[in-house]
Image 1 (cartoon, helix red, strand yellow):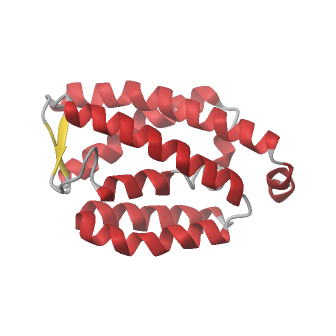
Image 2: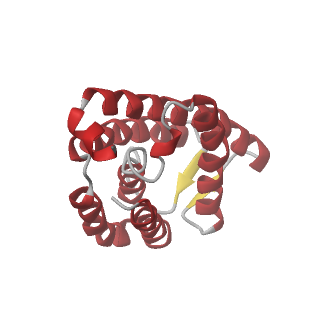
Length: 171
């Protein structure tokens, strides 16, 4: 899949979900299907979707439960729109962000900056609210996402090794 198409679909999903909440998340679902249909790594992508959806529900569910942040749309343990964003995120490691595989320090730095920025943008666009001071919130998210994204990319690298069809597609 063309990495530019992959990242464009991901960004479209992010904006639909953040700006439109649960109602617009339904419009993002066909984009998720397109991302999977265009993928030469369908099996690895589907496994990553399951993993990141579970991780996202746990991480954001815990953060919401402890009063770290709240969302404008209802949902337990997280709103539908946020779950859709986690699913969309799962399409990046084998495509537009595949260059990060086996670069754990770079992946951790990417997570430490990109994760908090995405949440902060969501707060600024009115999708959620931090209940801790901004700097503290961003620091917590930086630590969480540094470990998370390095782990995700390590899993993605292992998936590629274990799926010969994915290796041929990357060739």
